[in-house]
Every structure is written in C-alpha cells, then in structure tokens.
Image 1 (tube, rainbow over the protein chains, first blue to last red):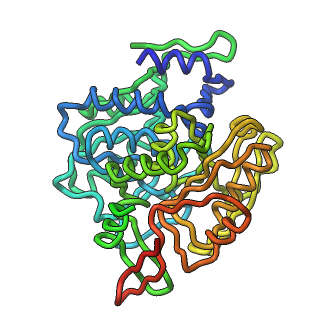
Image 2 (tube, chains in turn purple, yellow; image 1 turned 60 degrees about the vertical axis):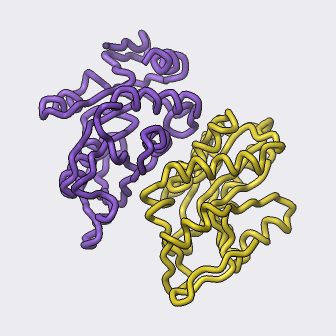
Length: 191
Length: 191
C-alpha cells in the first residue's frame, strides 16, 4: 500500500537490531485517516472471504481492527494479555512470546465471543516471527471457528513468521512488507 | 443516547457491588456499528470545541476514541499502562488507581505527542470515581495543552467522579448515565 510505505519512509524510525518504530502513526499516536485507509484496504483484500468477525490483540491492533470490522459490518474482538495465567473455564487461553519485551504473555478470549460458525479475520500491527498471529490462530481454532485470513499493517519479510503461516495454507496479507532496513541506508520494501 | 441505553438494557449485565459488565459490545467484543454511532455523537457534542487531538487510555477506550478522532479529522493518542514506573524524560507520567482491579497503574504518554497548542478531547469507556480521566487530565496539563472536554460512554452517575470534574469547570459528556442499578430490578438512566 503506497500511502503506508510513504508514511513509513517519512515517519518510521529504524534502530539497530531490526527495530522499526512507528509510534507516531500506528502504535501510540494513530494517524486516523491513514487507519481508515488501511481498514478500506483490508476490506478490499478480504472482501470475498466471508468474514464474520475480526480478532486482534490488545493494544496496538485495536484501532485498525475496529475500523476494519466496521467496514465489514461485523463485530471486533480483542484478546486480552496478562502476565498471570487465567485457567477460567470461561475463556480460551494461549501463550504468546514477545521478543520485543522479552516476556511471555497469557492471552485470552471469552468463549462466548468466538463460535464454531465464525469465519475470523485476524488483524495485527506487526508480523515478524509471527508469535501474536500464531496465538490468535490458536484461540480461533480452539473455538472451532474457521480463519478467513490474516491482515497485518507491517510485515518484516526478512523474518520467518509470515512465510511459516503461508506455508500452513493461510492467506496472509501485509499492507507494507519490509525486505531490508538499516539505520544508515533506510528501508527497502518488497512486493 | 437512546441507542446505547437500549443496548445496555438488552446486553449489559448487572452484578452485586455496582458492577456493570458490557463485555459483549464495549470492552472485549465491540459492536462496531454502535461504536461508529457513538463516535458520531461525540463529534456532534464537541463539534464547536476546537478539538485537535483525542486522548484515551489503553485498552478499552481505543476503539471508540479512534473512530471519534477520525470523525474530527485529528490524530488519536492512547496513554500506556504499566505496573512499573517509567521515569524516562521522554514521557509524561501519572498514577491511576483502578478500583476494579484493586491496583495502581503507572500511565504514560510520550512527550512528543502532546503539545502546548493542542486542545484535547479525553475519551474513555467508563466514568465512576473518575480516576482514569483524572490521570488523562493530569497528562494533558503536564504538556501545557488545553482540554476541550471529556467524553465517556457510560457514567455511573451515582458515583462522584463526573460531578467532581464538572465542578472543576470541565465539560463532561456521557452517552449513557446510570442513576441506579440492581441485579434484581435492572438499570435506571438519568438525563
């Protein structure tokens, strides 16, 4: 998505260790007109996929997931993170490793909000090693729902997460795919 | 807002101890068409207030805050919660007591996203004792910004938070004001 690539080039910050900060328009401050355009693009990409629900994980996926779900005319659900495990029988639960924060979260969704007849679009901000999407996929499959596809704002295409999920047969769409990035030379996108 | 009151009556759950659960359409699963209507209503209420930014707190305020900011054509910023204090000079920081979770959070916003020339609309899902809004207000004032007003989805009008903020001269608008609630007899709204 050209508009997003331009925004990343203009406002994204690259740090050593393959860190790309997009705090000024995605993760902390949100450019809401860009968010709307991204929701439109997810809708265009998955228009024929029969989406009945959008699932994301708190907190930085919520803004775009909400607009995307609105565009589809379906509810949005966000999975909740906690540091303690929740063994309640009312929730589906999985573990997600965060390499950014070097910790493992317990991630849960109330059972009543994911149903076997749901066809779920998973949305998240970043796809790198694929831990968060793998967690959302696990929660969806526990519920017996099917997964319509996965949409992410930015994929670090030089890491393995996206290709692993595609190899399992899932449709994974990224609005911007970073092929290479470097604090000196900047960002190269792949298409 | 009649549509919201009807939804609360139909889908809200009242538990002893003045607990109102709206997990099925506000806090965990989000009714995105209702969220859009709520954003429209916040826009209508604060249309003349000169809003330049919308500020909320993660996680359950983000969905409606994002749509509201989109409707105003301004960015949205969400303050981040953590259990450890962040003394970084890059952030504004305050403490917010959660009576629901019986804990105190450190809440931060990066300094670069709140500026003295901002006129901020604070948005949150619930207003009871007013702790979260007081925290967002504190962050806004630390930055030198002015506060255009405060919008909440549900106010527990029988608690003191809203009136305390109004007494300080702030414009506080709630889309539904609960005057009384009881697991047996249900919910009464005040206008």
